Length: 236
Image (tube, rainbow, N blue to C red):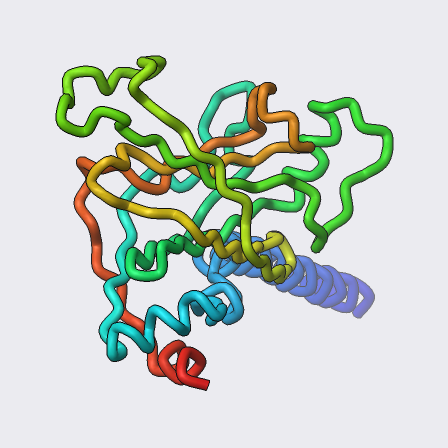
């Protein structure tokens, strides 16, 4: 009778090991699915426009019919060996009547470690705080009647840097998010492009940690609709 009991114990042990292996595989699959499909979902605070006084005034003046648009641009920094995947802009909205753009900047927790290493910083960079200097740069054609002189570096191309009016922050398990509001950003006929610059510090003569284009005059504008909650916030 000893042999059957030994076989039964082995069978039970094998079943337990198979169950544990199955649970481990399931956990890995669920983690991968979460990472790919759900971890990048924007927090609610990042899905809505910030109703600052400038935007409220423009909304009232338009009778509730504001034009809002975005464009299809590269949304993640992609310079190999420098900032590949460091920063992203999952959402940005231009409001021409308010001369405003609102931008959501996102970076992974690993970005903080990489920037610390890249810059040789001793102290680790904290989460959920304004660590980086983020500005918007408008590139303008100073001679709009002559479009043949719009090459980079031409003296007839001007640049204007705009600092944010306000900022909101939110964090998830993997990401830190910032919603920046920039006032005084026009998208008139003389504006060729608009960029988001990310620096550590404010020495703009140095190379930025990341630069992402938000607007180009030849790129199609994609309309954005105000949600019911955004409309209510703009009338409160």
